[in-house]
Amino acid sequence: MDDLENLSNSIEDDLNNFFKKASKVDESPVIEGFDDLFEVTDLNPPGGSGSGSGSGGSGDGSNGDRSGGGDFAITVNGSAPTTGSNGSPVYASTVSLNCESGNVILFTGTAGNQITRLGGFNASFSVGNGYAYFGVYGKVIYTSATSNQRTQPSAFVSGSIEIDTSANVETAFKDGWSRDANFASNSRLVYMFRIGVVALQKDGNNRFVYVNQLQTGDHTINSTTDTDSSVSPTVDIGDGFRQVTLCINGNPFTGFIDVRGIKKV
Image 1: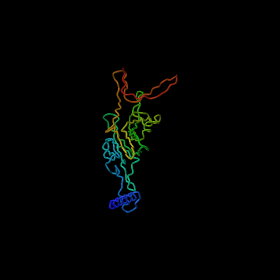
Image 2: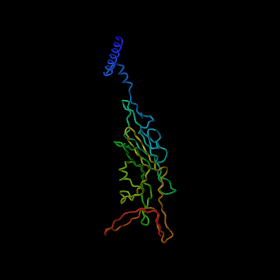
Image 3: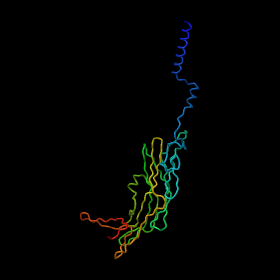
Image 4: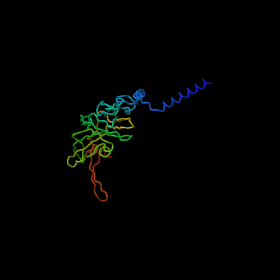
């Protein structure tokens, strides 16, 4: 019986010692060594192929960047995370958007005029989770000539590729033809067309780049100088602007309308 009591006491003492040690903070080198081995693995390390950023099916790699590849090709650079001084990944807050040059052809069968983008555009991801949108447009300026009260584009003046935020695109970019702001003095016409739309998505540490390329290859405006000779006198029916005057409540207002292929019926 004494042997059983001694065994019971020994087991109880061992258990008490175990729980006492377990409840204390042990600062021995063994514990410190264990702490050194503890790490959090980044699911998308810099240069890695994780799911941290991508590109809606139009990118050239897992980091979401997009290189060129032809006329008016939109490019994206800088979406991949970099490595900070402490070795941790630094996720992109901005990317550089650009667009390769391309040709705009005013009249079918004639040579095109090249327009290009001068420098990149720094596009920022949204501060919180969500999307930021950017428009990429071609802009061409022509002189104009007037015939039979119709003003049409004639000589190429200049061209450029414009990139801006969706808010500025909405207020300042105009699809198709419009008169230059100084039309009264320079008689110039402006033509703008959509090349593509870029969306940047932020989702926590993840960064996604989506490119919707609308324009590829030469862009033909197909302006015409047609006339209708089936009537007398011959009627000028080519594309261009005609000046019209509307009378509203007895007050005349003058403006321009863009006409295309109008025929007498």
